[in-house]
Amino acid sequence: MKTRTWILLLAALLVLCLGLSVFLLRPREADLAEISSQGRVLKTVDLHLDQEFTVTTPEGGSNVITVRDGKIAVTQANCPDHYCMDRGFCGGGTQIVCLPNRLVIRFLNRQSVDAVVG
Image (tube, rainbow, N blue to C red; front, side, top):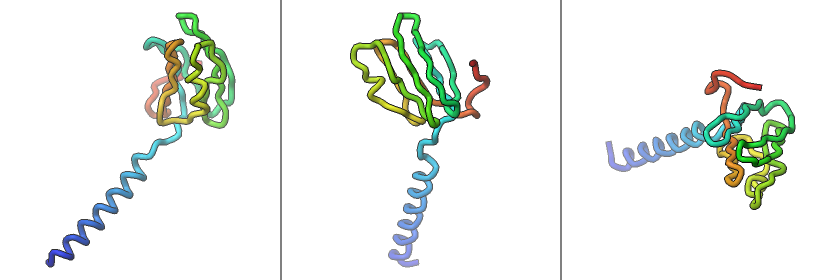
């Protein structure tokens, strides 16, 4: 084959691989959120059930967490910087962290969880 044909074939293959990687690697919306402090799971919540509750960490930190429309947010916190509140409602992809209160909210999918504790 000619060099030009090989270049076009490789370019088409590259575009196909790029399109598939964007489609397959995009962040998915999570089903569950795991709330933990210092490596201990405090609560696992279903993001499809709208709710609001307060989580108090063993160190005395207090965060009000709101679940709405499949997303979760820290809506009130007694930490000094309130960075956790600035994150707003998140549905997956990254974690929500309140460093002064040592609180971490990470996202899970049902297939990666053995059990849910209410």
